[in-house]
Image (tube, rainbow, N blue to C red; front, side, top):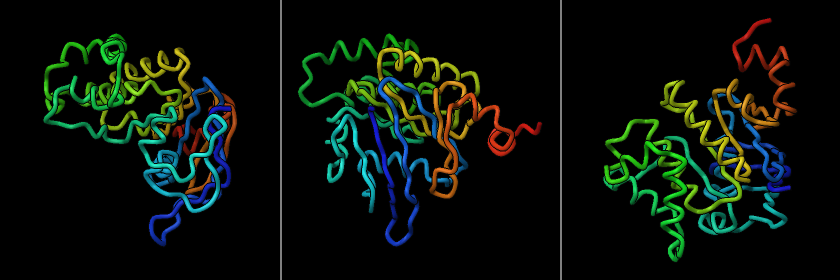
Length: 235
């Protein structure tokens, strides 16, 4: 098992957001986390990354607890995070943004850059441009590329479809699937529930900070309640 979360509870000050959340991601697996805006998906990813400190429960990655670590230490353990909204450095060039994702002492920096540029040719063509001049889809590719510069074994993705046209979103998903084929485990938090279920093996549904359902993605796609509530399909 790659990632194991058990009975996790997280709060912002006195406001509890996550309630006894448990899930797991196996090695090399793509797992989707779907739910409405405000369901707690982003909070869960930030808890894994130690951006938010959780109150109770446990997070274990590759057999080691992440409790008490800082974000950079979680990254060093092999987990990378692409936040909602990209969060690039707009005045810096594409290549500079990518370099920010690499470790300070990185002997294979050029090789890592080449891997990202191979995955995202459109980014390679604009590597000297400032990030602020890119389209939303190109910025998302840079954000993913920056995360991949850490050579992660697990990738956390928060709302990849945010601000993207369906066509561009498909191109981004193709890159994510290619990344997974290289052996990177993926936890995808996404409001575009239909595509998230289609590209993942298993899925969890979050409602009001709790896991309300889980199962194989194809089974959830065929579930009438899920189809109506999250896919907008009434049988």
